[in-house]
Image (cartoon, rainbow, N blue to C red; front, side, top):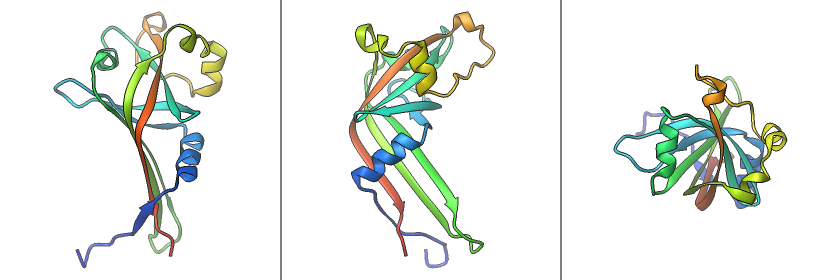
Length: 153
């Protein structure tokens, strides 16, 4: 490894992790269950220690079946930025693991259309008819949260 470039990283404190989750609106959600891996880019909203996702579900899509599966989901948020012309790169990542819950009843009602539009970027539709897309709000209650960032100096 002597000849491979590397950068030291260090753990992020809780305040920095929460700041990154609040300020970064998208990441990659890996669903539990099933014989095949399934991960999708999604928008999130972070509030009171939980992550919320606004998902578009269709009958033919893979997300609906994955939400019904038991197991731990994993969500990754990350970023990089070049610091100078010498190819130095600052980077960070936050990995959240926990159970997914589709919100129903009063918990779901607090995310009305206005609140969904305010909290999330526009939903991406891939050729489906809008009336065939069900909007689900899903909570990821973190069991574990880890954050790493490029070490300074």
